[in-house]
Length: 282
Image (tube, rainbow, N blue to C red; front, side, top):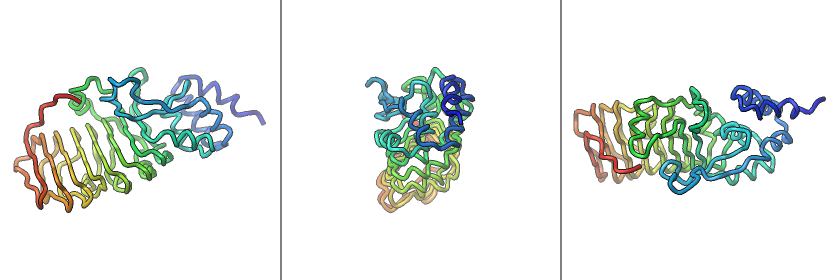
């Protein structure tokens, strides 16, 4: 039997997205440890921000790099492989950033179906689009539309996830996020959200929802939530029974369709403005 590497090598190095995807699918179907290590031997973990001036965009997250494959393709292999080499590589990838780069073809969707296999990741940042500048990118993304996240339900397998940021993603299912019991921080920016009723079931102590579609009602938050910030929600029309057992501060800033000034129950401090706050930086 011929070595499959002879057939897969030219496809993986072709740079043609559908050929690379086909080769990755075949590699996973074969499910041979030696093939996984063969592909991942050139992969390494690097800082997403190449220099300090880019921290505003990437934070202190990391990315997987490979000389021939995109980060997403390498992650699909890494998430499936269970060899010692792959385990060592995953151990060094705890703060993951996934982004479609500015020099690559803009796909109609972003495939994140590999997330469930990345069980060591504690901090995740999904950026399906490339923010154009440091100040107005929220408004630009909200106007241009969010990018569908294919396979988002797999995020429920990220058992160690504590910190989550999603920018410009459509199909962000809040019901899936309720399965992440260690999740402590959630930030959703310029997203299209599903199952808004699950917002009050998130385990996070801090929640930030900004410039998102899909939230028309905000109600009681979970007992673990301490601070919440809701900024520029164009669909928001109702705030009812706002509060939480341990809620300390809640901000509602920029709600053009909200006619009645909200109130918060208990000892929670409420900061409310119908107009969005002035943006001074990131």
